[in-house]
Length: 195
Image (tube, rainbow, N blue to C red; front, side, top):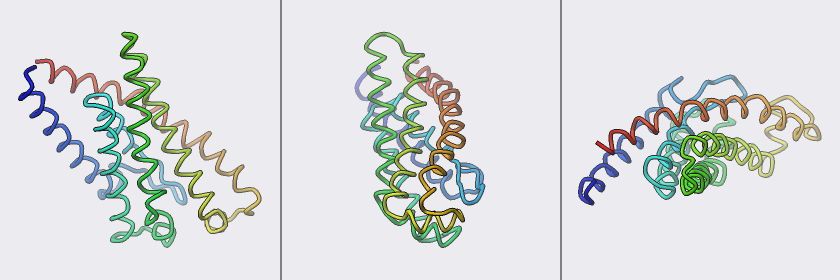
């Protein structure tokens, strides 16, 4: 593919994925499955796909779009008082999302150098997904542990056990979904680029 077509392809895919992230963030049930007080997400798959199809930097950029969109939603359409508390903090809303693109991109490209594209996509998608889960819950515990424990109706001393349970159930489910879906979408987009 010549450089001009490659640039056009990149801009088009960035635009499509950014629009998709915004739609997933604001339209109920397209990006999240609200099960209070949890909010399992599938939006991270879009970030992971960007890291595979474009670059690690572009995956991070799409992660940034996701984080900023999540903050805007918290300010404009909070689902609960907890939304205003948690998702207006850029460390919780933005940093994990950017890190999804970084981790997924770095892992995938390391496998790509070894000519293990399929395996790399699956492992990178799973690790990217777990990055989001672990960082979001870790930052919530760090900054708002007592408030979050109260919202979950658990003793603050048991919060880490509860969060570990969330990672083991919700987080693993999200990671498996990412490992199955992200490679499928990424391969389809890569075929379009190669034509």
